[in-house]
Image (cartoon, rainbow, N blue to C red; front, side, top):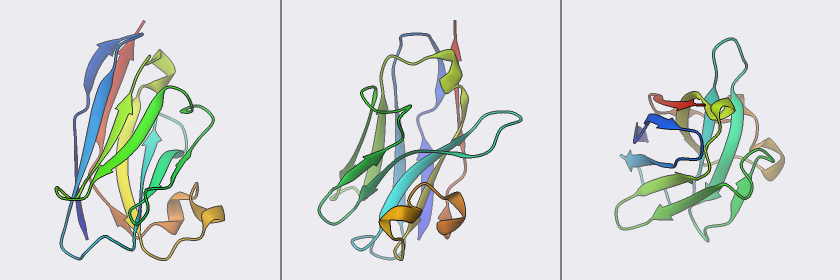
Amino acid sequence: VQLQASGGGSVQAGGCLRLSCAASGRTVSSYYVAWFRQAPGKEREFVAAIRWRGGSTHYADSAKGRFTISRDSAKKTVFLQMNNLRPEDTAVYYCVADNSIILSSLPIAAAYNYWGQGTQVTVSS
């Protein structure tokens, strides 16, 4: 599976952005697709995940109520709608996927075998 992330940019606090992750290659119907982020000097952090089949979603506490993960099956694309952005959301955001993950492993970056390139999100105060 190849993943192509896009949609990053610079916004002011309170603004919004929508990230996209386009999948190609193998069918992704059995996959989880997730977003992680990494700020300078910090560990990669789980943001949200969606199960392609069924569409169940999972969020980090920091994302709940502000971010929404969704998918468009026809376009094989996963979206991360980010609202009410804060300066602490500034990071490089990565789209990841795997088809052999258990629920307890969703927040673990090393559990995912497929990674897209990052897209920078910068939120200014």
